Length: 510
Ligand code: FAD
Ligand code: DLZ
Ligand code: SF4
Image (cartoon, rainbow, N blue to C red; front, side):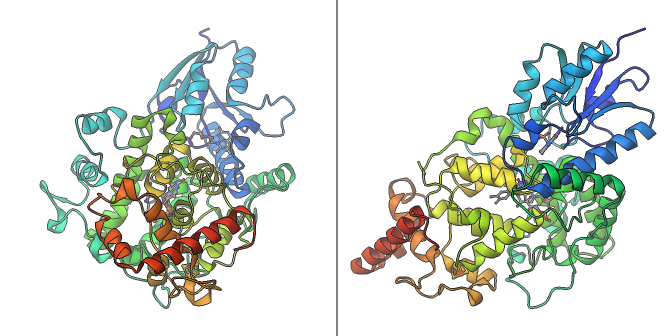
């Protein structure tokens, strides 16, 4: 009899057509799936994220068994659990006398390196769930001075044929973002993502997570995420009908207490394999073709997936394992404790951290222009910011989280992802949300005790990084405004910002 091979399926690889499975032989090979301490501990993950992954993994293992596969599944509390992915592979290799492993390339260099170091023969296949293969991205990046998403996105449109009219973009323009900047509406017409009641498999996971991760960050219940492909599709179908038409208009809006607005909550489902990215985009395109959603909404949504999502993955693998350690701006302040406990007077941050704590989710503008913006203005060590984002969001895996945090949000990569830092004073937050109305600080105050901290920190950031940014054409106007201010006022702004940062360092409530 031919020796079986082990087929490794990681928690975020629960797709029926995942590469390693496509290479395997149902009659010969053994699928290995493992809940392990090492994966739950490399950052202090949100409990809902852990529960979500385990629930998806256990349901997927059942589907595979029903489909005729032999599955070795290790639960976290199995007494023989070795605690790591490579440990579990070794254990099953001994048990089944196997010396070959079929794997799909993990989305993190840490795990890639672990698999490479194994004393087994590991055949790793590229993850084919992405539209752009490594080779495609490298070909696109080759010889370019700047790796801008917009041009990469156009190639993805051509490659997929999505929203294409022959070789021209549907409607004549590649990007309809200028229609997508409406501030928060007074009332929403969408009641939020579809919530699912946990079944017995998920209930068992919730009990395990509750027992094993006491004291960890986040609310475990109510647990409402989809755990199967059928549920995720149900959610998507409703979202396409009820929310997609308004997705574009309010993409950048924020509303206190409204955690999802018109966002799709597809990232976590796509990453683990419950939804296929192309299938999601085709469904959105169909909504446009059948007149159910306008072009600005559908183009904006498709751009996020075949543009930003694919581009971020390309950047992660193009830049290599040291990307997460970059710190171009030499920021070194520790992450304030209110990132964990929401104990702050800043209403925008409090609402974002509370949403994060309860849902393992915050929408893009909260991540970018509230917590990310604050961390950048305050000069927080990007490695600490990276670790926080990787821990707290249910959709956070290094391949997508790091380029968003180190690159887009913290400018720690020196401008690979963005041509200028995403910074703003309180004015932007006030324009796009209703946070400032309920804040202890006053967004109109530029100096003094009641001044919105984003206002003083904004100028502090520009002033301390003047050498780097004053010749950036996209930032020249900011420096002109700063230079036009009276010297006394500039001094007051800077000393107020310094005072605020001192209070932050002393752990005072701000
Ligand atoms: P929607 O707003 O409904 O967007 C639709 C789709 O577009 C989603 O499926 C999402 O996967 C994709 N998408 C949108 N923007 C991006 C982007 N910038 N990069 C990659 N995909 C994108 N996204 C993650 O998936 N994981 C992360 O860990 C993560 N960390 C982030 C950290 C920071 C500081 C910032 C600024 C952004 C981060 N993002 C991350 C990107 C984005 O915020 C999330 O993808 C989005 O909020 C997910 O919610 P949604 O599915 O409701 O997205
Ligand atoms: C994030 C995560 C967690 C919390 N736990 C597991 C686990 O127990 N078993 C597993 O196979 N995968 C887990 N994951 C997902 C991996 O960390 C993920 O595959 C890598 O970060 C690469 O994207
Ligand atoms: Fe945030 Fe400043 Fe507005 Fe308060 S005033 S909610 S700190 S932007």
